Image (tube, rainbow, N blue to C red):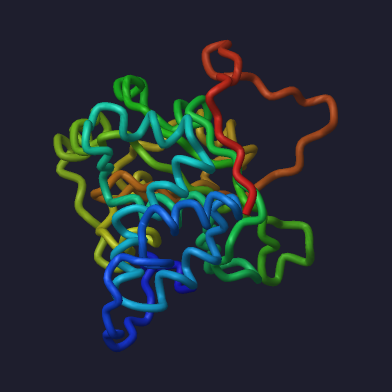
Length: 260
């Protein structure tokens, strides 16, 4: 899967229509996927079968996957919209939940992550002081061995998502600073244009501390739909180093831990 593009499937030629009976019935498909715990690989395969299945996936399956596998996160991101819509769509969120975009300096390209934990407590470390009213979920970094690093250097690849980014203080701050959208970088989850938070000088020091990254070794981007992706150079922590939580807060109990 290309990490720079949203989940897309080869569109086959139109198949003969058999109405909404059998496996093409949305309720039947829902029961099938419930029985296999909403396996994302199977959803990808089904969505590539026909245009109708692709449409059903967009309308029902991607949202149901997110709600089933990360109920707290899905509810927080869509709670204020009675239609259940989210910025960028459920398909992009599903990819963000399960797909690590990799990095140019790693041996591994983008890949499905075997497991991921998303935390809004971690997200607060990525918000400047005047933007801490925003809700942001951020994943733990996925470790990748750096090319030519001799096994000693590791790059952490992380991702995240804002709730209602269009109304967020973070976006207001970017607009107020007249931050320019990047020309060569696109969101790996929805394909939208992105801002470099480093170029906009909106990377708080608390973000590097939260990730265990050395100073100046962190870069991340936020797209117009509120998807976040970035990388950081990780430093090994000694066994007696305890992580200090943001403003003395404990990690909240609404984090979502995802397994592929």
